[in-house]
Length: 318
Image 1 (cartoon, one colour):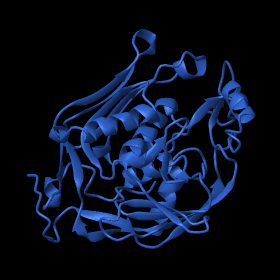
Image 2: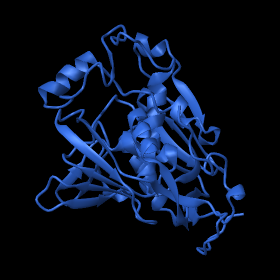
Image 3: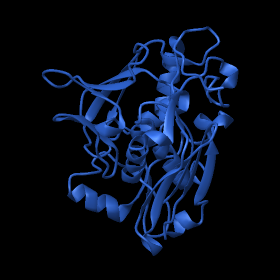
C-alpha cells in the first residue's frame, strides 16, 4: 500500500501549491505592527518558506521543527537573527488545505492575527486557487508511539503520537474559569471528515483581561482586542457576539496543534492526543519523533485510492 518510489503517474497523490499569489494586510497580535503578507506559489519539494522581505537583504526561513526557536505565547521560527512570530494559524490553514509548497513574503517579524483564527488564511489560500503538482506528496507515517510528558498531579500535561492510517487529533483542556468550564473541554477531530474549514478553522485564540493587561505592560498583545480574540474577565466572555462554536476554546487548541505539528515539513499520518499541551510541548513532541528513526517513515501513495480519507480531495469552501 505504501510506496517509496518517486516515479510520476497521473493517479498518484500529488503535492499542492497555489495557482496565483494573494495578499493580506493586518497587525501582529503581540507587536501591534502593520504587516503585509504575500503568499506565492512554490515549486515541488520547496516546502513552506517565509521570506523577511523588509530586511535590507531578504532572509528565507524554511519551516521545519528545528527552525522553531521560541514557543512562548506563539510559535516562532528563525534563521540567524531573522525571525517570524505567530506562524501557527497560517500553518494550520496550510495543513487543513493540504498545501505542501508556498512562499510567504512578510514585511515584519510577526504574521498578522487577522480575526484570531485560521479562517481568513483559509479564505486567502482558497481564493488564490490550489493546484496539483508533478511530484508525489510525501507523508511522515508514525510507526511507533511517541510521547512527551511534563509535571504531575494538577500540573500534568502531555502530548502523544500513535500509529494511525489517517490523521486525527484529540485534545483536552482544563481551565478553572466559569466561561470555559461551561463549554466542551475535550474534542476529537478526524481530518478525514473533510470538515476542517467548517469545524476547526473559525475557532479564535482566547485570553483573559488580567493577562492582556499584564502582557501589554510588557510590550505584548499590543494588537489584541475583541475583534481578533475571545476575551474573558473573571466571569464571562466579553465579546458581544459570544462564541462561534460551543467548544471554541478547545477547538482553537486543535487548530494551534495542527499548525504546530505541520512545521515538521510534511503532513503526518498519525493519531495525536494531548492534555493541556501547548506550542512548546507540541514542538518537543516533533523533536522526540525525529530523534527516533524507528518511530516513523517517509511514504507516498502511487494511487490516490490508497491514501487515507481527507487527503485526496481539495477542502471545500464554506
